[in-house]
Amino acid sequence: MKLILASASVRRAEILRDAGYHFSVLSSAVDETPFAGESPHDLVLRLAEAKAQLAAARAVGPAIIIAADTEVVLDGRIFGKPRSSDDARRMLTKLSGRSHNVLTGVAVVRLPDAERISFVETTRVEFAPLSDEEITRYLDTGEPYDKAGAYAIQGYAARYIPCIEGCYFNVVGLPLSRLQQALTELGWTENYFSAVG
Image 1 (tube, rainbow, N blue to C red):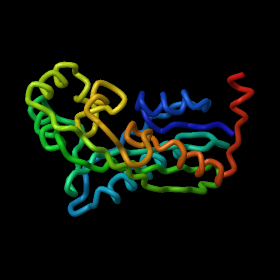
Image 2: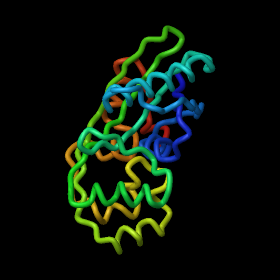
Image 3: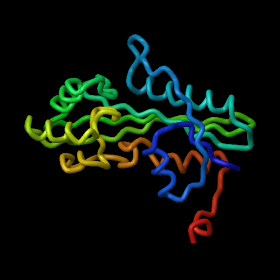
């Protein structure tokens, strides 16, 4: 049974590839605008399920589709991808010296029977205090601009994150251990030891 990643995210593909998964990519772009009054938890779950449903309509089974959506949340507010340098600076200033949550909604769908497992994984991330100069230097790297919350834990921002509580890969964009549990529940097996050995 083949795996299909319903995402154009380079980071999610790297997580799967580095862990020995063999998969194809079927990008599924959806409108990510939150509904009025929608909680961050409900948003990431809804978007992951919408991406999975879109990919399922285009895929040919037997297959298992993996879709995800990740958001950074501070004080109940969603910090999406920054729209500008000023927006990225605002986000990093608010994250500085504080802890926030990273939520990833994941939807895993088996074809052709459309059996589905969906969940939300949360990781708490602590940011060190950042000076204006440090924020400026980080913005100059160009890294923040296509990242939720304006930072990448696997990149330059790692030097400003003293600790996390929860799954590291969740912060990158795909909670790997929880995903493996869902794949197993849906009957997916792969002998990656022979694949990589």
